Amino acid sequence: MTQDEALLEAVKSNYRKAPISTAERAILDFAVKLTNRPNQMARTDLQPLTEQGFDDTAILEIVQIVGFFNYINRVADALGVDPEPEWAQPGGEGIKNQI
View 1 (cartoon, helix red, strand yellow):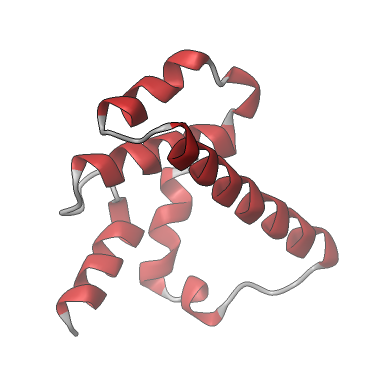
View 2 (cartoon, rainbow, N blue to C red):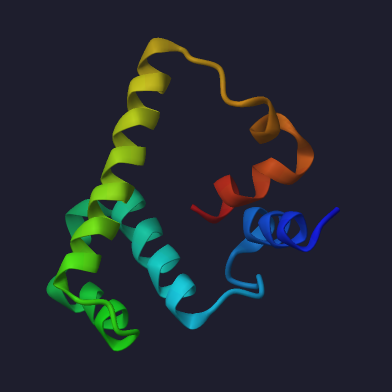
């Protein structure tokens, strides 16, 4: 396993405990809330991102990427598309439990 694979496994298992930057953690925290509770998003949810140096353009890109993945996952779920094989492996279930 390379260092990148170890990091990937750590993020999949529990991104809050993974050795990632504060900026990466802010993005993931934002993405989790936007995914699970979009109706509860508020202007204050942007503050951790701006505190990490993300400008309006970067925040827009984060929102668009999260939105796209949420959209495509819902389409796949609606059509009964099977998940990628690596998500069915033991290490792949961890991130689903965080969300």
